[in-house]
Image 1 (tube, helix red, strand yellow):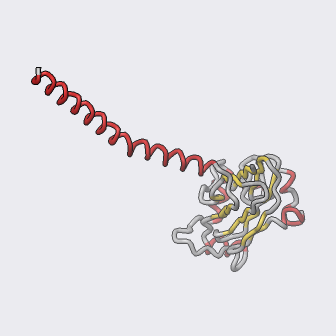
Image 2 (spheres, one colour):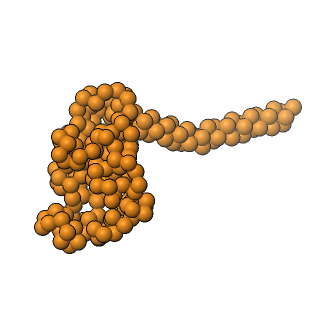
Image 3 (cartoon, helix red, strand yellow):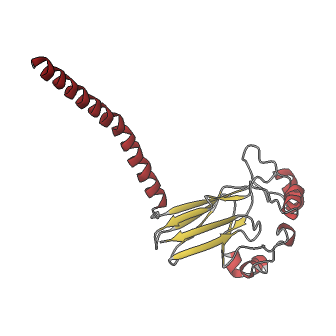
Length: 197
């Protein structure tokens, strides 16, 4: 009888130890899952302020030869897209991906400031549009029609106010709740969506 009780006690102890080790093994996994869920929640949470960076890879030699001295101030390593290549890629409907807004989607709280910084080598605009489309340089539109907000280029005061020169920034305040679309009116494939919560 004592032998049976001893065996049952030993079996119970083994089962408790096995259960405890399973809980211990699952503990870190549960913690990792909780941390991952928190990271996702933080990512989806609107920010109190946000920054978007305008980037490009203009080759100073070809851009400045055609557009004037000092037009392209690119100091980035590997900034080697030649002016004619930029136009050829855009015309073919495969615009240069190195001309970009990063990130291209942000979520901010209503009333939060949005800062757009030009870290590229040439000017850009960050113009709000109702729908994405072409800019004011037809040869860079890849067949898309010019959107009304970009029409008439820099002679349009609304476009001129959204120009960002190399090394400068544009501050945007007071965006209403909802989705806002922005694009460069020069390089219209540069696009960003700002979701205001």
